[in-house]
Amino acid sequence: METPLIRVKQLAYVRVEATDVASAEKFLQEFGLQVVERTNGQTYFRGTDAATPCYILSEGPGTVTTIAFEAESVEDLQTLSELPEASEIYSPNERYGGKIVRLTDPVGMSVEVVYGREALASMEAAPSHAFNMNGERHRVGELPAVAYGPSKVKRLGHLVLESADPEKLYDWYSCHFGLTKSDAVVLPDGSSQMIFSRLDRGEEYVDHHVIGFQFALDEGTRVQHLAFEVGNMDDLMSGHEFLKRRKYKNVWGVGRHLLGGQIFDYWKSPSGLIHEHWTDTDLLNNAHEPGDCKISEMRDYWGPEPTPAFLVSRWNFKVIKNLLRIVKARSSTAS
Image (cartoon, rainbow, N blue to C red; front, side):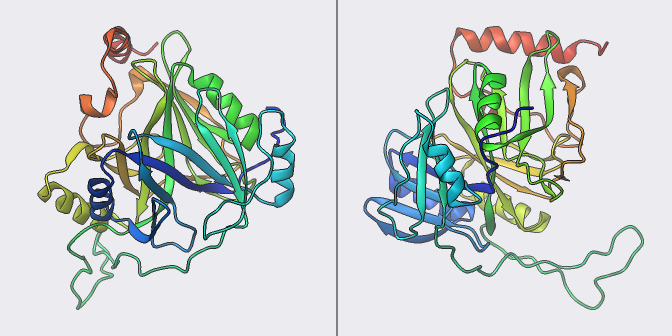
C-alpha cells in the first residue's frame, strides 16, 4: 500500500439534513443521543464519551451531507490543504472551534478533516453489572443494573458508504486518510461486495472498521447507515424495546456480525436514514492480516437475515439485477 497523505485519528462527526427537523430530533433523542445546543439552524448531539458533538442536524433533503475525521496535528491539515482539490485551512463559525480542511470524495461526499475542536466532558454512561455465567458467580447479593428507557449512546463508531465502485472509493480514503483494510466480502467474479476498513494507528488496537465501503444494489451513492456504540447488551436491548414501543421501524437485528463481531440492532429514522446500535466489537492492530470472505460463506454468528428495507435504499431495475446476482452467489457452493 502506498504511504497515505495523513493517518486520521478517529471519526469525528457527521452533518445530517432532515426535512422534518422536529421529528428527527425526537427520534435521535429516543435513539439515545443527547442535545448539546441549538444554534444557527443546527442541532448538536453528543454521546456520553468525552468528545465534541458527533451529530450535527439541520434542515434539508434528508441525507448525510458531510463526514468528518479528526486529524493528528495541524501539520496534517496543512498537508491536505496543499492538494488542488482541497480547501484552505479555515476556522468554522461554530462554538467548538478548531480548524478544518474540506475535500470532496470521488462520489461527491463532503469530507471535513478537523483539528483542535473543544471536547465536552464525559457524561454518565449506561449502568453495568457483573454476570453469573459459565458456572462463575460474580454478581452475588445484588440485582442486575438495567435501566428502562432509551439506550445511552457512547459515540459515533462507524458508517457505511454505498457506491457502484467500493474498491475505487476505498482506495481514495486509504490514500488520503490512511484507512486500511480489515476484511472484505467478495463476489464470485472477485469484485468486492463490501470492504471493511479501519483506522491505521500502528500497534494501537482500534475498532474492526470505521468505514465500510459497500456495493449499492441500485448503484447509487449515499451513507447507508450510521453506527453508534452503546455500553453493553442490556443497554442495547433496553433501547430496542423502547424504540419498538414507540413504533419506529426495526430493519435488522438483534444479532451478532461475523465480520466485526458487533452485537447489532438497526433502526430507520423518520427521514429514512438507518441508525445502528452496537456493542462489543472486534479490536485489531497492524498485526492483523486482512482476509476475503466469499459471499456464499457469509453468515453472521446469530440473528435474523436483513430485511429488504435494510438492503435496498431505492428501488430500480438495477436493484433486481444485482439482487439476483447476489442471491445466486450466496446460494452457490463455495469452491
